[in-house]
Image (cartoon, rainbow, N blue to C red; front, side):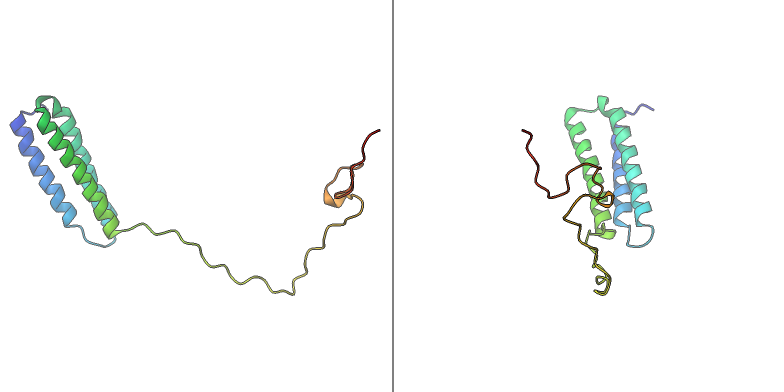
Length: 134
């Protein structure tokens, strides 16, 4: 639907005020996210209407309406942080280590290689000096 400048001005002002009042009326509780999401959808719809109508508006008004749309979206985000802040990341304390009576792993053998330490057959043992070819 095409609007005149005056029609758009009246619609924009009314919708902007309604969204601002809706955001201010949101209080902490279970439905905070849903209410703010609804306000954000209304804001996006208002921005779409503005975008479709911007070609008939003077440049100054385009800047003003765009700034008001951004301010409205920012106020919704600020209200969301205020009422339902994201949980901060923190490390959890680990349970105390297992008792010291658990058998320790046996140290690797220093001698020749075995299939247990994963070395291929015929390979020098771990820690063995490498021979130089003559």
